Image (cartoon, rainbow, N blue to C red):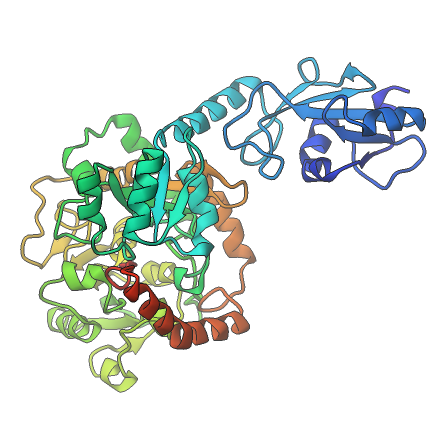
Length: 500
């Protein structure tokens, strides 16, 4: 019986069930319950199910890893190539070998597969020293473990300085600490032990949903100098932007990435309602004032003159007396997770309208100008062609692209918008495909974020009401206890870390 007369396949084990989509795409056959004429799909040649199927008179489709694999390939995440045979003979492909996209699992040509596998292998090899993570919440670890895996082994997780130093010495590793939860003595201890230290924080295209509501992030930054939102010391991003030679190809790539982010209407969190139902004045300049979490390090250390949401509103009104002023509370503050709320009557004494729960992208589509301390909304406004005034010193200020009002904001170099995007979103940040659970390029993440946003509940936080209530209880009741325990163990740095 030739392969095209086989009515269907049936799985004989967990691995085959995990690889059903790839096997179907490669062979053109579909899985169904076992029936007369079907072939049993077996993982690995020579496994016991194969001979048993033959004894029972069933045909046997054998599936095994192919010759081209990435370091991240597993039955759970898929294989970059599969070797498939039917009744002991190669089936299709190049001698039975089928090449697959490591992220989408769709069939591709061998040359394309080689390029993708080489890219992944380079990311894996970049973690040449064992990663020792410090202060990583458990819900963040699956993504961080993928991004930290390397030839020396999977990352090790610890919570204290002493444990980090011991693990670093034992594995000859490097220490990566969540920037806002690093133990206070960690930097000095790493220097004394001769261990490299870097800080980790969320990237600029993160998720559909807030980090405060435990939505996993799909991008991070790893900074071996400082961290991008704290201008008290140079960060790796600041040095990149100040010194990098931005090639024409890189700038062109950044331009395409920027245009795609704007066209897909993506942002860091991708939450909020649309603004179509709101009425807007005609003939007036509309200014957006995005609120922030007031105890964030980016506000406390990066905004020396204006350091609260109320002070920002006051400054914005003084500078724009005739404008129609919109105040958008920070999503974490609005949800009741973090401090920084302004009583409504006080906010409306300065702003013309409060716009809670509205998507930042929808607002940026409708306004002319943004006034901010250090919010990432200022960066998102820049890439959409808006004017931005910064009262603090965010990473995107000082390069000639914004009106910089804080002292000491000038960086001594002028950048184009796409050079800024290249430095921040391509060279500095690292990305994870949250479906394939493999490192990816930023362009690939856009597809995943778009799909996740379209599938998410359409509300202010892109989470359900029950989840919101649980998170309110967590932040009100559980977190104070957790913070106290961490403090006793010497864990935890600056509060907050999201400069939105």
